[in-house]
Figure 1 (cartoon, helix red, strand yellow):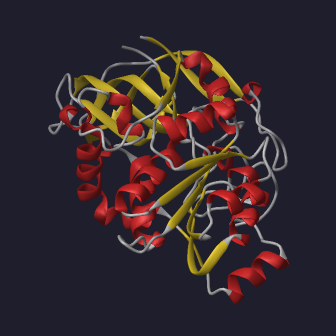
Figure 2: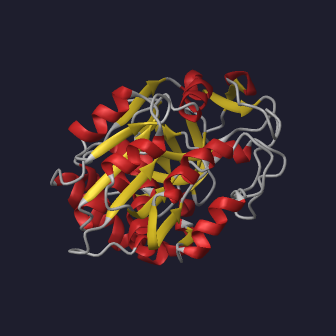
Length: 347
């Protein structure tokens, strides 16, 4: 059978901004003759995520991430349906997901490497398995719970950077549900600010492209900042940390503003910011969701209940067609998405 796939065409370079031209669409022949343990899947949805920028380099800078190879098929989070199976655990029609899904319209995969999903967990919104009821939701929920130290009744203020993105939009809502009296989002447009406040229940939002972050935070966080969910890094994060209270907590989740630069992870902070962290006893801890997968099953069930009961609202930006994978990825890296960036491959 003829299928389409996306391969890595070129590398942007450690200090380069990725371009859709870094990806190439190919048509290949796929032999559907399965060996024992294999399944043929049709891809429904693929995910593009900030960490993938690191995989575009020869050295990802992280021992848990392998680089994509030139002229080889790219992979990431995916959801699809089984069309043929020689795996005892999976049958035709099963919906499955994986962290290592090839960017192909159809693929032959090892059945044991796939997770069968329960459609009732997402009320049929299958793309949610790549976002709110998937690894993104786990990152938001467990990041807040494990590193945020949110306590009901403690009059805490949380700030989230990258707040209109896949993870940030969920983290802010979880912080509010867990007891923060004030949740402030930082994002890159007035449209996103409006969505955070009107759709997701944030207390306020700051457009870092059009407003003075420090001045706005002083105005809307009169009691200072206790918890900072950091998806961005750079100047935005240094402005937030400057407003933080003694004994506060920084959840170091991502540093998307730094991913196109050749700097170590996590990137170094200025001397001034380091002094603030030390003098105010602010805990800045890196959060890696893969270290907490023993808690994933219970957390995914909770996320499912929160989404189905509309206590958490899910925002998505959906692009159609495997030929637009590179465009969707580069748009996401520039902040072109609101909520989770998804590419729909087939019905």
